Length: 289
Image (cartoon, rainbow, N blue to C red; front, side, top):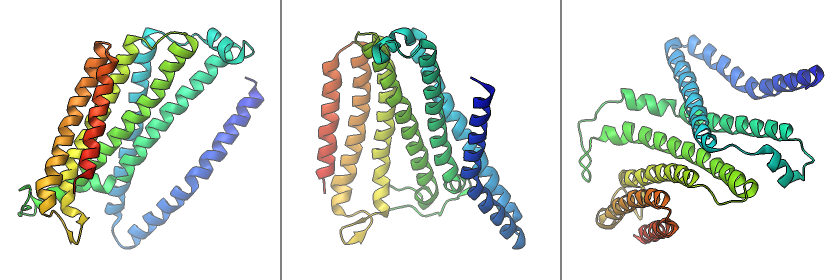
């Protein structure tokens, strides 16, 4: 790459960075002046450190998780870029250029995963700090027998972390599935390898466990929802909706385990049966009053 092209890319990157960051930086400066004027500079510093720390933690966690999974995917075999060039471009694109595009795509993918996790954690800074410093109310709810502080402080933070984990697993598994299909089926002209199937099954099973945990937590959310004419849990919720969500969560765990068995024993019928069972259970739970 020529020096002129490098300078152009650097200049474009600086312009793009300035365009993206100028508004947050202006808002940050205004907030700093406002908090200082009313004598709450410590509150501003706590907010700033929490948001920056969570953003960096999310960026490192998301990008690192994507990198580790890509390393596991390429340990068995990497893409044959010469063959990929012949398959996709009939040899018109050199293998070195194909390899460069692949590396650029990988870098972009890791950046997207990292930024998604960083945004979720940083945006939920107040929820997470409330869970850490929030206390108990000394009163329990009449349905689950849990302190009201759990529903106000801890539950939103757990839901936030669960959502971040689901996004992380999905954004990692979906591109990896495309990588395996491209490497094994499109370029390699063969079926997806057993190791690749087990890798995807592990990520899919983890994602399903996270989703099932969300269904389990949805039982507590019923206390704060408007269902029918009143807020909170009614008779149908207590005797139908709450048990149905618990059963759905259990079925999700069973299906996640079934997915692992199907991948390790190469039984696609078991994976299909697990998916069908989960779909029927979800439809039955959705139909519950």
